[in-house]
Length: 173
Length: 294
Ligand SMILES: Cc1cc2nc3c(=O)[nH]c(=O)nc-3n(C[C@@H](O)[C@H](O)[C@H](O)COP(=O)(O)OP(=O)(O)OC[C@H]3O[C@@H](n4cnc5c(N)ncnc54)[C@H](O)[C@@H]3O)c2cc1C
Ligand code: FES
Ligand code: FES
Image 1: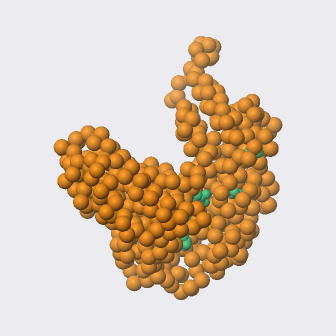
Image 2: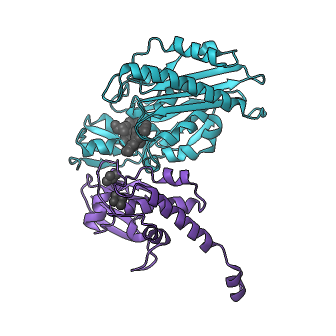
Image 3: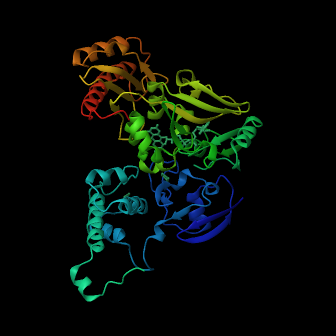
């Protein structure tokens, strides 16, 4: 069966068996190996991707079900090759990863959370990553990473008085 | 962990979906896939054909009419969780939804899929039975409906027949002004399937007397159970009345035993959580403003 997918802003198509999960199609057909395969039955969250901006388990969705949706994988988060998104960078800074197996899923779950709020409580963060298992960190540093990323994004989103004084504000028409 | 081969069809209309289901006994509906795909991956299920109903317009949407809120079968749990109509008019459903799996499973899993799956410890079927919801079906002969009491017949078993699917769930809206809910469950980790769950909804008059009460327990028997605590009507829901009513109502619960919990444990916890759920619902209702009719 032919499927047309939109992955990280690019239209792509592939000929796949209906039984092939979105996870396997991302990894095998499109070589997007950042999406990790863990349990392959919905328990661990390693395979998390964003579908229309919302975290979803790609092992619980067949690729043939996914056409027409906007799919974002971990490869789609960095602003440019060789760079890291603010959240990715925060995970490095706070030691939010050890082996890194759960990390793409954790970061995408955190990304979806911080798209909705930049002032998450500890409970909000715990809830957002509650479906993702980490066998290394004990979760403490992951929560810290998400808090740190939120702090940075909050500051970045506040226009600093100095910056405003330097650059004239361009009015939207 | 790879499913066996199957054909995949995404019909455009509900009639087409029913015809496909009626014509092939190895065909199966897929909605959110959050239960079915793991079963396929573990090869506990091997349907020859999957009929994808998730995008059928006839199964979508949430609307309030004639004293009930009708939730389309393919409404995703995450959408229902945030829906203002459900929050205002079926508060018990809003209360339990955060306990159904995790955010990513709620982003795909549907309300109708959970009902059709009929897991004895699932929260949405528990609400349906406790509030006396009606299950609206699509059959090859047209629309039909059934009470939740008749619909759920055992663990993962419903009366749904070949060629039929769940169209929507009709949750009754209570007419009273001061309504409160309470919900508790015991599970290994938050949002895992509950060993025991209890959900309560109560309505109070202006003086704090109980006007209407509903209590149900999940995970205890082979399907969700509604407990008859109507003797609480007219009381102030004081601790003695609550525990008396629950002890009377839970006497003949037929509890299951498995490797997670014994039948005796389940029965005991059902009573404890039932008391807590009713007390929480009472306090929740008492805290509501005495606002005008909604
Ligand atoms: C990690 C994890 C944790 C979970 N935790 C919980 C939990 O705590 N509580 C809980 O209740 N659930 C839990 N679930 C299951 C829940 O997420 C599912 O969403 C739900 O049980 C099924 O809904 P679905 O739309 O995904 O259905 P599907 O998986 O698509 O289908 C389930 C079954 O119902 C049938 N079906 C679906 N829709 C219809 C319809 N409209 N008419 C007729 N038949 C239909 C299918 O043929 C299939 O047999 C969990 C799942 C996972 C993966
Ligand atoms: S690989 Fe998808 S949840 Fe584990
Ligand atoms: S860093 Fe190893 S599983 Fe999370």
